[in-house]
Image (cartoon, rainbow, N blue to C red; front, side, top):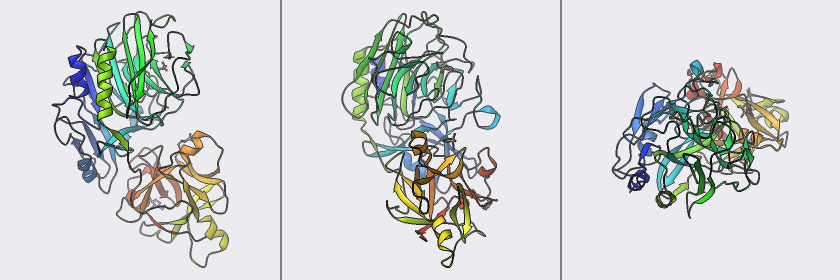
Length: 481
Ligand code: AHR
Ligand code: AHR
Ligand code: AHR
């Protein structure tokens, strides 16, 4: 059985079921998600390998070979048509064309399920999915449940990495107009014990960790790499539950009455579905989503415990974030452009500015050092790498406003993440493409001989499609210095 078969047996059927990694019903063999590729804007759908099975990641890999792909639709497996697509502007605009949010990279969150490769949905700030024209989700004070499997190590404190029930207008229409899972370390509204991250309920104008606003210490900090999160609500009753999605059982972090602040009892749920954003399209948060559902009716703890057993049996595990030429920690590298007309130029820096410069074996020692980088373990993720300047130890390549710069390590989580890159086999078929860990749609790209983290066909000038694939493909060699 799949999670939604279990919810059905419990009398609380799924009314929305989303996953890019696997079928959530044992009989489901339809489309899980759609990807769109940059090279020709063609789309394809990815289905399970067999009914009830894991997504056919190999089909995605072959469709996306030599280009980049985005997840354009996450299909609803419940049959109600509650698909998630690129979120529109609301109270806040997104960064993409016409105020839409960005779509997620199709390759930002690789995992295995029982040893078979699949891809989750890696939400960078600015990314979001939504459905404002839903069927069958809870409205008003009606009962509902939901769970989501997330990466407990990928989060931030911005508003709001959510999955669940929100406003159909994409605007903040008042307290009690949402009921969604929140995950992150925002302390703007509520918090739990420790320094976070926490699973909380986004009920609109408040992230709740218990019945009171602010701190509820029974809600623990949780950061399992694969994290099961649960929120459920019915008249004057709701609960937060969670656990390790790779082993063991669920714990109940809160179960009790609705918040006493005004507007949350009764609730005024509207039934739209959001992923990665707040109800008003606040889009500063980050996180990773693998699968999740919404139910009609308030699921019993026993039903959810069976769903957790199903999740554990799916055996989520990590897999490599890199491919192509191996990078060795401690080695010095130089990176040469491969775009025709620029092949004598290497990634170098002039102070904080990162550029390409012509470097040869007879260049000055100073220039050779400016074009050489020490490979270190990724400051923000040890499965990837950071690049420390050979002539300015303690300073690393990092992106800021998507411009690549050389900055001194300031010890912040933001810096660590901005300075972490996951090399891939070169998109052009030559060398390596150096992907940003935190914005996996983006790669080291030279544009007018300056360095950016660019996405193919994005909104900035440096995202231009012309020569993108060559501009992001670098020949890697032993460092000049
Ligand atoms: O409740 C927290 C956030 O407040 C909601 O997600 C958003 O709509 C509002 O800004
Ligand atoms: O480069 C994009 C973002 O710009 C970085 O993550 C952040 O440090 C800055 O605001
Ligand atoms: O960086 C040099 C060139 O500038 C790039 O190849 C091109 O994309 C841009 O015009």
